[in-house]
Image (cartoon, rainbow, N blue to C red; front, top):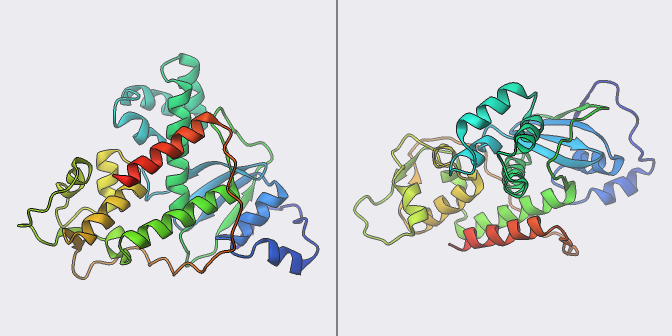
Length: 278
């Protein structure tokens, strides 16, 4: 992990203790930055994490639809309103603040979509990387009105998602490669949600492109694609190459469940579980 700028020394003096605290972490550097309560931007190969006082306040990935897509795809917010706010603001948090101040977006809807986008992009940002990441310290972040999450919560949710995909269908080839119909004549019944995905399988588009087209979270579209693959309805196009596969997840020591006190976050988790159960 390459550090950019002139960061203060990390407050870890005992290397053995530091290694013990980061054991099992998806990103040991990210865990150490959380302990340090660092503020800045961590740029990784497949995404970017924004930290404020050691918590993740925003995440972006070219592989996941952003907050603007999730807000505008299904009528929560007019696309023109988001475009105007994005043009006036210096970033996602500032655009969200403008929309809240203007009264055109309910705070609850914004927070839920923000958390959806954060966990979605964070999943890809924490994908195993072939290049070192870079962290840029920032002493004056723009946190904005959006909720933040602990690093350990993002890592735990990312691991949960990896395990879910593996249980649904262990072959990750269809996650990022162009998709084709495995059996175009099949009369298998699928839910309307997965039918929308299947109807866009054309040998060119990937699952992530289909997610953007539908205005859905990329991860939930991967869940649909893995289920379609398990049913023998789709597969990766021959010879296609996508992202490198995620290595097997070693057993992790049991951890106490996170205590959720925010009713909006609790609602989000219930909605997430319901979507994944479809």
